[in-house]
Length: 224
Image 1 (tube, one colour):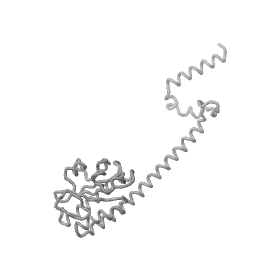
Image 2: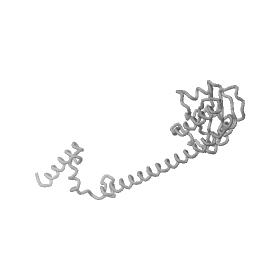
Image 3: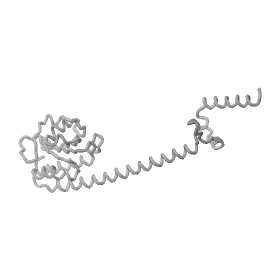
């Protein structure tokens, strides 16, 4: 066997060994420093410039990291804005002297403060007859608040017909809040023209805080 054939045979043995032992360079990382990699061959995609690959990978990781930081900052800013709006809503609700004024505050003010297009109020208490307060059957109401949850973000299309009959053609997403009203309930329906305004994945911690404030106010009005 001549020298060239012998060298080819050794190369084949090394190649076969490396294919069978894919973790070889993980066990011996120092060997990589001594290896030489060819430049990228324009005529083939199989040969890769390792330095170029590393640079491209690091650059993409930096871009991804910058995007993540931007998303975090935007989310934080949005959360602070939401906190300010809920605080403003809370103050207006607590200043309401009667149930009628409370309902009017919810319908007229929360629309602007919480940045939605329409707010409707409903009650399962058939004895209440107030402006901006609509009647709703208790069975229908309960079907939208299963498992005793105070909010509904499921985006059931039928909910638009029930809770936004005056704006059914423009509402694309909505949020329902269930507030205790004695042995009955007060439902606040908030609708938006945007499909992304209210989604099932939306966090509701601030909204649930607002529900508690309304319930406290109702208790002070001796209606809860």
